Image (cartoon, rainbow, N blue to C red; front, side):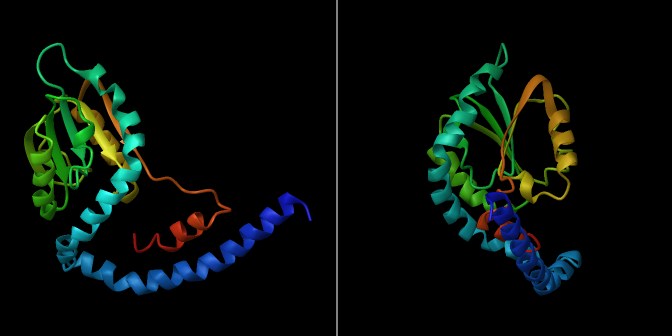
Length: 206
């Protein structure tokens, strides 16, 4: 049996297993979809302490990648004044430690209950200035003026927004000419791996 044939068989087996499991999870999560539609699901945002604790550990794993991502931020400082950064999906402020001294940060997150965790990061990273925390989704940045930001940061966010294209359009709108979007994102794993399998199985819940 050739490697190509073996790979094909593994892929077919994974697909056959994945489809019924994904369907089962869709059925199990149907009440969540209904609850969200009628506005009864907002309570879940209060339990993001779990995400906060997970972020602390995950951020340690990602530290080197983020340091590499943000190493060129200095290039976008304006001729006068501070570097203005808009962070989409700021969460608990896990990126703050990587920003250059003197930046002015505007935070956007749809979850208002993240603010207390964000304030902890602000206190720890006092080399920055914090302009505001805006409760909004990335698709709706109407509280931010056109051409008002030097940099937009979006890390591990686009995989969970409703409309990726709209988020990117809004990011472009608020950036000044010559500004930059810095992003780091989850991607689909190789189709022969278990990671790929579970990414698709859990997609309805995510």
